[in-house]
Image (tube, rainbow, N blue to C red; front, side, top):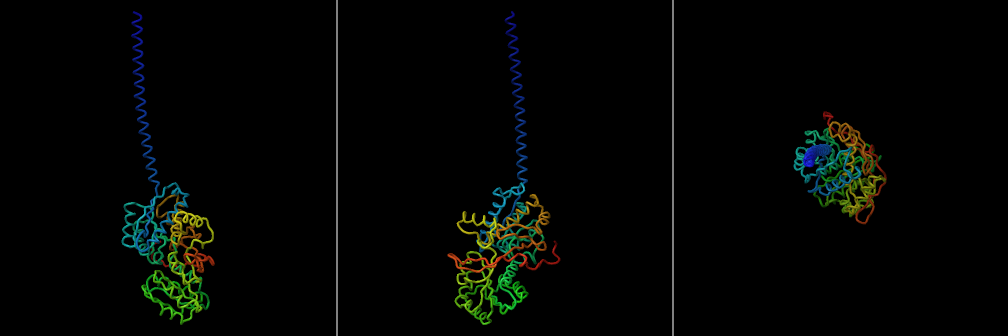
Length: 423
């Protein structure tokens, strides 16, 4: 009897323990499910926080079209700049940088369309670019309409930071007026007689017209101005008229394969005692200038010209390593544009509010492969040094050799923003 009772009691205890274990397991399962739900919620929150921390940059340039080479240089320089300035993290002030590239095709209507897409669909926080001044002038009104800061490089038309400027526009590149002042700083002096030669286009006249008052202010005399047609191939009559005036210097502004360099050499202009001067261009154009080796002029950038600085040293080394070629003018410009963007975002702590950016960037100093630059407060035009050079013979192309650094403040162009523009 006792044995049966004992067995029954034992069975009850075992069943009770079993129910307790099952109950605990179910409770633990519920707890685990709750923990999983909490973990998933935390993951979603962290993901949302990460997305909220992304800064979107809309980058536009000529990845095709007539300025494709310039656009690709800018793209390479901008991307290398972001890598260098963020130590390869592509993060600024704890925010991830996302760059969305669009090809303007070097057509203003396409540039406007692509910029609109970046602003409306991609909801970018800032814009950078472009190679073409016409593209820039098509985009500037959108920057104002959408209240979004745009940083231009290398588009150089004076009107971008002049007649058609708005408060959202900044430019890290130089403008044509700075080129003109630099040329005047190199060749104009009291009593110097100067002739000019440029195509009869907006580009050609924009390169000469700002030069004239700068040269005359330094005591020089402009003795003749020649403007051949942009598609001219025979420059003989223009050059002979220039030689008849016996100038001390001939300032040439030209771009394109139909250039006057060979005929200037064949007519022995330099042998007649006339010093040919121009801005030393990108490497592709330098290859067409063997006939004017020895000329005196200036350059915006050539990889061996700027005095040693860490940013340019890194750029040259990395560009050779990755592309088996030196960086060019617009590669340097792309890196300068990236430097301005990163510097501004570091100063704002990653805040992309346009009003805060504008206030921060006005007067802001930033580094570049050519040295320190700063945005002029009145028109947001970057002030930067340029370089007086002579053109020496090289293996592949004539090589600009540094004569002196032209300080940024020596070549500050006049402010041409309309008086009634909103500041």
